[in-house]
Amino acid sequence: MNKDKIFKLAKGFRGRAKNCIRIARERVEKALQYSYRDRRNKKRDMRSLWIERINAGTRLHGVNYGNFMHGLMKENIQLNRKVLSELAMHEPYSFKALVNVSRTTFPGNKAVPKKEGLSSIL
Amino acid sequence: MDVKALAGLRRINLDGLRWRVFDAKGQVLGRLSSQIATVLQGKDKPTYAPNRDDGDMCIILNAKDISVTGRKMTHKFYRWHTGYVGNLKERSLKDQMEKDPTEVIRKAVLRMLPHNKLRDDRDRKLRIFSGSEHPFNDRLLEPFVMPPRNVREMRPRARRALVREQKKLEQGNTMVNTQRKKEGADASSGEVKSTDVGSSQV
Figure 1: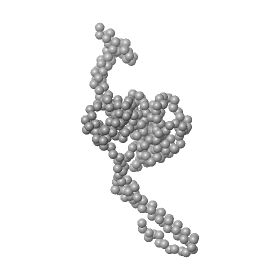
Figure 2 (figure 1 turned 90 degrees about the vertical axis):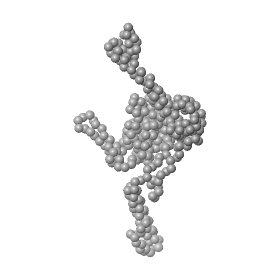
Figure 3 (figure 1 turned 180 degrees about the horizontal axis):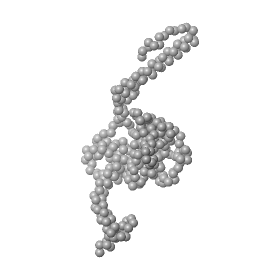
Figure 4 (figure 1 turned 90 degrees about the horizontal axis):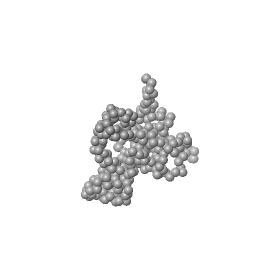
């Protein structure tokens, strides 16, 4: 009874793990453990992917992710990172408007003032 | 040289990619390489996805004019083991630059990319040239503007050494100038001017 279920779950495995019950049972158990763990990891991975995308999108407009989110929090804009990353990918003009809103509230990125390098001595 | 630059271009599909040009003249090695690695991974695009390679083609010019701070030119060593017992070979940055300056930047960038299956494809998108000539002049090229950098203040001792060197150069210049003026005066008017060159303190 269990064997059929295990072979059904073992479809696509490499080598004897899809054919021989002793090996398949181990691999299937491990696969189920991984899938349990990764259902929780997926939420983390997706969030970090959204943050990377938002970062890339805002840096095109001269603002980095931290200052952007701080400005949004100040303005009490409660768009989540998923929506923001979708906007950054597919709605560039709306995203630029959001970046401008954030920049007026919190102008974090100034052009760095050139510290005295070699030119001051000469 | 030309053939190697064009090699493997057919393997790179998706020409929705931009061709970014980096000028390495006067740039610091590591700081430039980290920018190149970001562009090569495609992390400056909001459509970044970690499972596919969407980076732009990067062309780097003037690789022989790359600069490093400190004593790295003589003290930085590239080491590799050939596999045979006792054969740890090393080569300094200076020798590597004489041998092949493009390898310096290539190693730096490759070691900054994530070590996964996409690394080879990303390497294929990287084209480095020692000089400023490249065979991609007919493509649509975009120069890459490096982000502004705040240079640290010089340490007091290094600063004083620099000031000393500047003064020496200026003294050398003024000595040459006064000698030239003297010779010019002699040639034109035939008078001998006795200027005491050694006492001129600037």
